[in-house]
Structure formats: C-alpha cells, structure tokens
Image: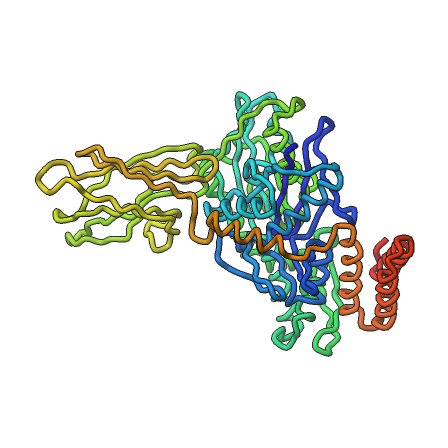
Amino acid sequence: MIVGIDLGTTHSLIGMHTADGQVLFPNPHGQVLTPSVVSVVDGAVLVGQAARDRLVSHPQASVAHFKRWMGTHRETRLGEHRFRPEELSALVLRTLLADAEAALGYKVEEAVISVPAYFSDAQRKATRAAGELAGIRVERLINEPTAAALAYGLQQREQEGRILVLDLGGGTFDVSILELFDGIVEVHASAGDNFLGGEDFLQVLVQAFKQETGLDTATLDGVEQAQLLQRLEQLKRELSARSLVELEITLAGRELKWSVDETRYAQLCEPLLQRMRAPIERAIRDARLKPDALDDIILVGGAARMPMVTRLATRMFGRLPLRHINPDQAIALGAAVAAGMKARDSSLQEVVLTDVCPYTLGTQVSRMGPDGKERSGYFHPIIQRNSVVPVSREDVFHPIHAEQKFLRIDVYQGESPTVDKNIKLGELQVPLTTREGEGDRSVTTRFTYDVDGILQVEVTENASGKRHELVLEQNPGVLAPEQIRQRLQALDALKIHPREQQVNLALIARTERMYSEYVDQRDQLQGWLLQFREALESQETQRVERHRHELSKALDALEGVY
C-alpha cells in the first residue's frame, strides 16, 4: 500500500486511498495536522505538537519552517546535534509514518509526497533524500496544486475543463493551471513564490505591533519573542473569522494592549497581495489563456482562509473560488488519490498525470555587442519553463575563437537573461577534436528532462559524431548517495522517544509553554507539572492515564478550550 504525504511548512499530514475514499491518519493527539516542528530535549527528539509548544518555552532547542531551506547546505544546531533541512524533514516523515503504521498495523514502505509546484530541481531532490532518510521509497513527487485538483475530483469529470489552483501555504505560494481531456490531467503552467506564505503575513502583524506599541523586540529574550509570535499567530487566525481582534500581553515588564481589524490588516498586507498577483498573471500568460476561459478557481492552503485572499481571487476572476474542502487537508487528500493511482487501485479511474518543468533550463553563451566586442554571461534557454515533461530539446553552438580547443557547456536554471542571476547546475567540457579549417567545429547540445527531475545533457561534435554526456542527478545543496548513507546512520543513532510516550511528553511541553505565558498561574501550573511527573515515575499505566486526563482538562479550562 502506498501512502500520500503533504510535507508542509507549518503542518504535515499523511493519508491513503481506500475503497470508501481518502483517509487521513491522526496523530496520538487525535489530530490529522502534525506541526512540522522539531525539538531536542535531553538528547531526545520531539516532533509535532510537543515540539511546537517548546518553540515558546525552549526556542533555542526547537526549529520550524525548515521546508524553506530545502535544497541548501544550511544546518541547524539543536542541542549537541546539527541537522540539515532534509534530516529535519525526515524526522517529520518518520513521525507521520509511525502514525500511519499505528493505524494500519503494518509497515509502510512507499509514498507519494507533495511539493510546491515552483520547487527547484535541488529542492525536489532534497525532498526525495528526506524520504530516503526516513526509510521509505518515494514513488512520486506530485505538485501541490495538482494534488489539490485531484482532491476536488478533477480526474472524475466527464467533460473537459480548465482549473486554476491557488495554493497559499505557510511558507510558499503556488499557482497552477490544469486541464482535463481524454483521461489526461495536464499541467499547462506553473508559477509561484517559494518565499511567500502565511509566515510572511504573520510578520506584517509583528511589524505593526512593534510600531504601534513602541516595543523594541531586541530587548526581548528568546522565550518572550517566541511567545509574541505564538500569540500573534493566534490573532491572525482569529481575524479570518472576526472583524476585530484585541491582544493583551506582558513583555519586557510592560503590559501591552493592541487591537487590529481585518480591514486594517488587509491594508498592511497589500504589498504581499501584490506579490501574489504576479505569479497568477504569469501562469495565465504562460498558458496563453484568458481568465474567462477557466472553468473553476480552487483556493487551498491554510493561509487561504484569510478573507483578503478570497477577495483577491474574486476581484481578479469575477467569481468566488471553490473552498468547500478543508484548505489544510486538500493537498494531503489529493496526494492520497495520487498514491491510489500509483498503486493502480481498482476504485480509481485510470488517469494520466502530466507535469511541467517549473524553470527554464539553458546554457551560457557569449554575444557580440554593437561595437563588435565579445560579451559573455548571457543565458540561452534550451528547455523553456512550463514545457510538458518528459521533454527533449536541442540547439547548435559554435566556438567563438578559431584557436579554441575546448567548448564548455554550462548548465543553468532560471529566468534571468544573464547567468549570474540564475542557478548553475553543472558543466561539461567538450574537447574540440576538429581543428580550424578542417571542417565543422560546431556541436549539437540536447537537454532531456524527465518526470523524476533528472536532466541529461548530450553534446555531439557535428564533424566527428563523437558524443559526450552529463547526467545531472545531483545539484548544489543536495546530498550525494554516500552522504545519505552516513546521515541515515547518524539519524538511526538518535534517541527517539517511543510513540506511546509522545502524548505524555507533549502534555509536559504544553504545560511548560503555558507556564511561560500565564504568569499569574505559575504556582498552580508548576504544581500540576510536579504531580504529573511523579505519576510518570510510578510507571503505573492507570495512574498515568488518570493524571494525564486530569491535567489535560485543567489546561483546557485555563486556556478556554472546550
């Protein structure tokens, strides 16, 4: 059985397709949303809600939003360990898999994982590496907007249709235009912003709060900064349902009161909304469609709950977007459908899913200026962005100088006319065996890009027919196979708490987080925590369960959760 996974910036989910539809597996807290947060305590690793609570109480030992760092060499120090983004993602994947295996009763070994449509080659390969580090085989990476379309049943339509999917998650914004015809779901165009999401809308509130209260956040310690972010995140969520929200908080010895209404918040976020318009317009332009040619607009992603996002889509397309499936769950449900298709589930209609190359791929060339002087550093596209994959394109190149003995084919990814603003993926040195005056010294260069994100570069000397090849399976910032094996051994050596203890550890983390927030209740919270720790030390199952239930109820009452 293959599972579908939404490996998100703020939350992650796991599910599978059954004869009765898609099922999402809950974590030990009964929630299908598992926070994408990792924390280290006493040499042990916490993942999920417990780690999220420790973001407030122990911010230096906890980390979130590492999906934004995928495909880079960035490392995060937690305790005595240093983690790459792939390893942090692998820890989240392991937790999700444990939840699925607890529900299913058997080991899960294969998965379909969703990724932002605008993820680069390096980011996609880093996601595959995370799956390998987590001990699963990644059967396919599916673009998040494509997964959303599957969740809305695009593949079940009897008539042809075009759908625009807007996916605003915690850390990324994706736009895709898809079309269904003859049992094929084809992506026409993808665009997006890998650094625009709910976290950026949260930072708008942070800046407004600082400016209007006169608070200097540099005077706050790590716990207070994390507490402020947590409270403003809660305020942001409340603004999706209420027109006016007030905040009272004590920071740096000051009691601060602040209020903001949804209209004011939308005005503050106008620069972000303008950033959203650009990839939407680019996708429509690339697909060569007019807005009225779209049959449906789908809005997904947790941040899509904000009324200002719905208004933006409504203004741009003159109609309300579809949002009847839980925006937080749509990607995971679609990934589960894709997993069922991959497993050839008999209850699913046979559909062919196509994808596109999200970025332009090309090489560096030199050009002659008006003054006759040679200028290097120009980008020459070979495979244009949004080409349906698999795709293969070729072009002919000539040496500039008669005495050249080598021709270097640099491989770049990006949309800038100059290579210095694009990403270099690799290079191939081609010796020119034909001398000047002996015949054709040109070479034919072919780029071939497949659905697994592997780019093959073939260079053929036209005079001799001699062929040179470069296969780019690795990118800068991506782990090599030997590195993955070494990192896997290191992860296996980590002390990970057993799943049956996670619910207790999460309750401790929640109590510690509330201790840092509810100053007037600290004595009571400390007493409750002491009693619960004593119950855990007894190792008496019934006593632990009783104390856990009582502590949970007390904390719910204190936070007003019913």
